[in-house]
Image 1 (cartoon, rainbow, N blue to C red):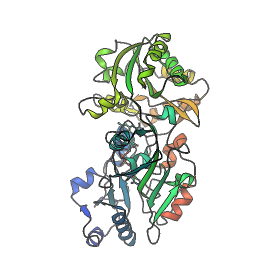
Image 2 (cartoon, helix red, strand yellow):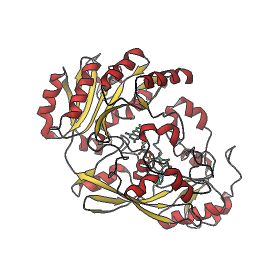
Image 3 (tube, protein in one colour):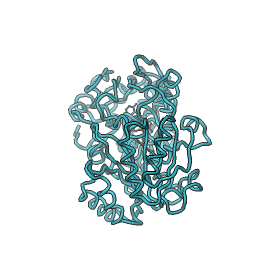
Image 4 (cartoon, rainbow, N blue to C red):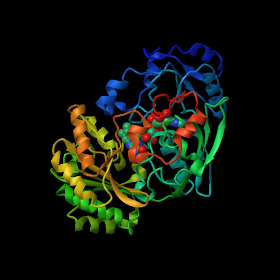
Length: 453
Ligand code: FAD
């Protein structure tokens, strides 16, 4: 049992749940109690020793309900887990208890009228492939599409590839409806559609266990990954803004990278000239001529191109989105453990001025990387800059300087929804819903700071 866990009756719980896959193997439980929190030296120190006490792997909604019922009866915390690719210890149990591994509930269920229904443990790549065979594709996915689950994306992610066309999961209409199992007395399954589903959208599994998710899709299309080199970062920035506004170019993604970053991108490093900044975009094949012309207007030159869908299906290939979003940080961390990152959104007005101000002020310390996105229908530049780690005080100074430039920060160095979400918070009465759905505070305790059981 982890040092700070209360004395939970795990043996009694498991005895009451015959037929449900479970393990108390310490190494396995510890492995399933971790995510990518180690990107943050601050969270690494806080969370490294945290662990659940057992892993349970339900096969269907009925098993989820049985588990919640027995856990509630014994006051045992329950923390849901999908692919475990979250970044802020989202699926790390802070108070012991059980890790609810959702990966056995991974079936696609139906696709009607452009809305897919699936179980939460399905990998996003598998759901997208299944939808593509039927003429549709996901509107949005994280750069971890090949390893993350649908439930984890709704429960803890919500932004990424596709954001340039569809915004984030917090935009009304990107989440159709869900079925969610609660920790009420007794635990129940609720059907929530539209705004009613907002209290379970990006709440880290604190407001219920998603057992089915319905997502509106978009018609499937071929995509091309294109890499464009620019002589300097400001040119790449001007290109990115023009690209994001180019309504004649069907697009799914647009990211830009300061010259220090491309050497960390294995397949691209040889083709990006030294000292050049880089843009990585996903466009429809019909837009390649327009893209080449737009790039040339800003001094850019196409240096690599590939079929996105072929690349993501090939385990030996790297779709360009795996250099984008939070994969940029990972590509650097693979070679240099002395860095961390931030998540931020530049002001809507004149974002390039604010970006250039912090980029030049912290030259060598902040390695700029930005992604084009939409928020509330407006084009925005968001960023996940890689930061040379010194200590917490210096990180605080950098964050304060960003904020002084009008740059919003969703702090990735904290475990609570409230402290970490900022502009990524989904609208809705999450606290009120939590009080109804989990009055004892047993679902992923410690992650919703405003809640007191
Ligand atoms: P997990 O990490 O397993 O869980 C995430 C949260 O959801 C946890 O709080 C968990 O309790 C909860 N949860 C899981 N399943 C359920 C369920 N069935 N019911 C209720 N709650 C549940 N995120 C983005 O949004 N966009 C990105 O582009 C992106 N890029 C990333 C790149 C890298 C390299 C890494 C390491 C992370 C990145 N992330 C990104 C974060 C993460 O990959 C995504 O949020 C992903 O969707 C999480 O899915 P998962 O299955 O791994 O979830």
